[in-house]
Length: 283
Image (cartoon, rainbow, N blue to C red):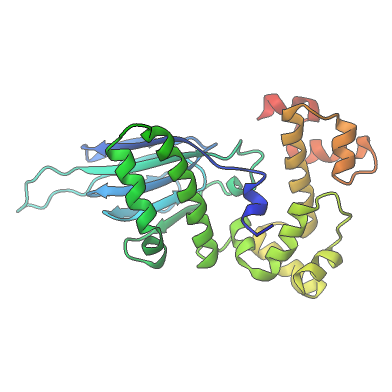
């Protein structure tokens, strides 16, 4: 399995909403769910996204931005110049994606991750044909457009994440780890074989690195140790299987490499914050 598919096969994105929003006021607000990821694209005009406590993002026509998870944003329009009294407005294209709950999906671990794609850069050029098709279907709906738009948006997101990895656009977190060829080999090994009795040494061997070099690079890039990521991935997979309700805890714990259900329960509560039986309420 390839690097990106090793994540998306477990946390498959689903387009839940594709729309466009027209901003006419100098100051507006845009409320985006923290349990969803977003692709925002400037169709017309320019604006500033101002998240509370974080860096502002300027967008002009043709720019886009991926938000790993949403939040409430202040939206600012530029003030008209003294010699140009034309009414200022901006139109923003918004794709919302469901990756599962924030508690389960490692792609949503960072509270605020904003990745801007400027018009004309390498990523924007690669996305141009699919972007044109997505906008055309969305802005000029035809028979079956809703289904077509949703599938195009999902394909667009996968291509976007792939290009982020190829260009090393993201420097921290899971996508950054998967962008590193050596770390990716160890991460994919965890994703594909979570039941294996991995140790730092065996994961470093997968990466083709020394134990110390691997541990240091992994923690700097992923924000946690290799063994912490292994435990986190196992518990997230376990939570999904519990939610599906088709297997007992004993079977799930065995499939994920735990020698006893009691050890599995302790690890689950430590990482997920709730007992396995409460996961449906927690998510």
